Length: 172
Image (tube, rainbow, N blue to C red; front, side, top):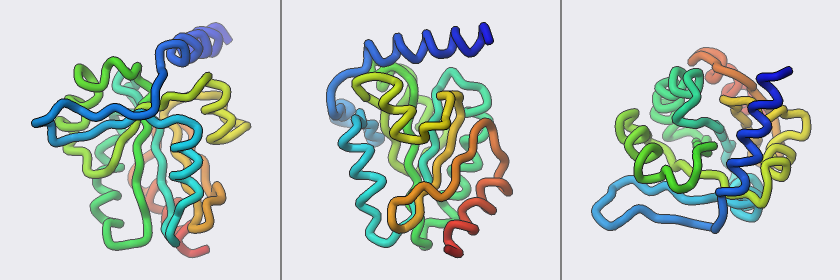
C-alpha cells in the first residue's frame, strides 16, 4: 500500500510539471517526441483509418519498461506492413525530452512515434486509458480498428504475449 501511495504522489507531481501541447526537438535531431494531451490522445484512438492501435506507456526510470522495450521495436518491425500502428507514451517529465527520453529512444533504436503525456491531471490520463487502471507501468493498450479498447496489459510482458494480443485483435 505504501508503494502505491508513493507512486500516486509521484504521478501527481508529474501532472503539475507537464503542460503544453507539443514540443519538437531542436533542429538537427532526427527523433521527435511530442507532448500529448487529452485531445491528442483522443485523436490517436479515434482516427484509426482501419488500423489497430498499440499504445505502450513507459518511462525511462521504469526497469520493466526498459526490459520490454526491445520487444516493442521487434513487433513494430514485424507488423510494419500490417494494419497496426505502434505508439509509445512516456511518463517522464516533459523537461526530460532532450536529456533522457530522446537518448533512450536513440539507444533503443525506436522505430515508432513516441509522446510525453501532458494531461491536465493524472486522473484524466489514467481514466482516459482505462478506468480500472491503477496507473502502474508499463501498461499497454490495444485498440481495434474502430477505436475500441480491445486489450489492456499491465506490467512487463514478453514478445509472445504482445504478439498473441495483437493477433487476437487483428482477427476481430
